[in-house]
Structure formats: C-alpha cells, structure tokens
Length: 353
Image 1 (cartoon, rainbow, N blue to C red):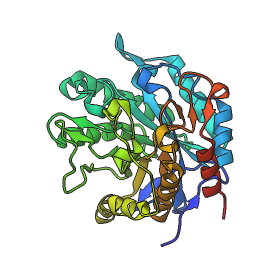
Image 2 (image 1 turned 30 degrees about the vertical axis):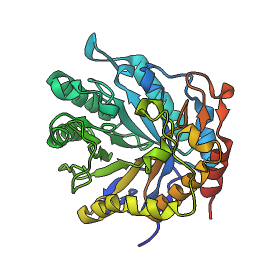
Image 3 (image 1 turned 45 degrees about the vertical axis):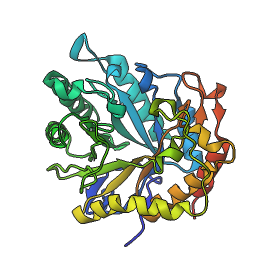
C-alpha cells in the first residue's frame, strides 16, 4: 500500500474518506500529523487569546506539523441565555485561526470539546444526554459551523464530540452523531465528519467487542480514538484522576511491544470495517518527563507506532499546565516553560526524509 504523503505543499485541498485512508481531491493519500490546541476549554474561556496566536502556527510548521485539533467550547459561539444566537466575536476568532493556519500550511480539525450539556470526560456532561434541548442546540451549532466553513479547505474535518460519556448505552451517541451528520450534510458535502468511540457507558470504562466504536451512515466519515496506555504511566500523579500517589515508573525498551499490542484492537476494528482511523489524542503528563521516568522514549515509541500504522494523529496538547509542549496556562507563550526535549523530538521525527 502506498505510503501517505504530507499535505503541506500547494494550496489547501479538501479531504475525504476512501476505504481505510484519508485522501485528497485527486485520490492521493495524505499524511496529517500535529497537535491539539486546547484553547483553555476546561476553564470555559470564551475567547482564548492568550493560548496562541499566529506565531504558534509558524512554530508548528517549523516542527514539521501540518494539523491542529482545535478544541471548541460552545460558549465561544453561543450563550445559554440566547440559544441559537451565534456570537460575532466567536466567529471572528475561528475565522482568524483559519487564516493563520492557511498562511502556515496547517489544517484545522474543529472538535466540540465542551458541548451544551457539559464536558464529557471523567464522567461529566450528563446533561447532554438527559436534556433533549441540549442535543438540539448541539446539532444546530454544528450545522451553523458547517454552513460557515462548507467551502473552506483549511478545515480538514468536523470532530463531533470529545470522549462521549453516555448514561445508558452506545446507541445514545450513535443516534446523536447520526442526526448531527445529517444536519451537517444539509449545508456541507465537502468535509469529513469524525466520530469518536464512546469513552464510557453508565460509568463503566470497559470496552466491548467493538472497542466502544459506533458507526453512522454517511458517505464521508472518519472514526477516531484516544490512546493513553499505560494509563498509570501517561497520567502518573495526575490529581484529577485520583492518582496523586500513583507512580508510573520508568519507560523502557520493552514498552514499544506493549504499545503495539494495546493498539492492535483499534487498528483491527478499522480494517474490519474498511474505514479510516484518526488518533485524535495521545500524550504525557508533565511528571512523566521528570525524575528519569523517560517520557521522551514513550513519545518516540508512540510517534513511530502511529506512523507505522499510517495514522493521522494529534498530540495532546500544545499549551496548558499538565500535557503540553508549552507549560503555563492562561499566559502568552512568551511567558511559558517549553518542553524543549519534546519539541526537539517532534522536529527530528517529522523532518522530511
């Protein structure tokens, strides 16, 4: 199978799903590798102007990256007091990022990270599933986004919902994803919709025989998963995961084989269903790079594994306090602490060969 090429030369072009690959308008497989812009969504910052600016797109380009998974907090575009009324300054923020990305050969995947009803991860956001009004707003918001960017090739796709955490069963997410994709198709036939596997069902984090994926009926869909194995290493001492006192140990040469084994079921699911997969998140907490834990070796193994599988991928994340290329939330990059070893690793791994 022909290896995908990096989508960095020439004008931006639309992508679509074709079998297990993401291809451009000519049918050429494309190679997308980059990072997540967290955009201070956990703090529900409406316009995260201290998170990044145009210079950060230049930094990504210099590292060899060509993709940003762009996290969206619904409040950037819509207030609870005025549902369905979309804010001009929110659109202006997205438009500005599209233009910055275009100038530096970077594509954007818009990701609804905090939807109406709340952030899904860690067992939160149940109001999205309990309240039909939130689901209607979710669908309408995506339709509005798609209508605005339907003819914009810098936008590589619409990642509908981060880490769905349903209350009863997977079908809750399947139905919402299907309805959302149908609304998008009313205004946009160009862009892939990206559907994530269910993160948890009724508080259970166990995977079923389908690795918690759901499928939808759509002519241009990509399926995505996140990968933080082994969790005790990637989240060593993570306070929000009740791991303050959990030591993840030191990464060693035997780890790569374990990672390959852990990722195999996801890859097998994609091959079985003949669909493209996108590794939407992988990354390491700051402490994994400290005290000789050897986090850089884990990062190198993961980059190699993702490229071996020819997966598009985005590292989580670019600029925050815990998982980052630049540490220091809510302050400009100029005042932050770079994870220089990780930046150098990306630059070396993504250099043209």
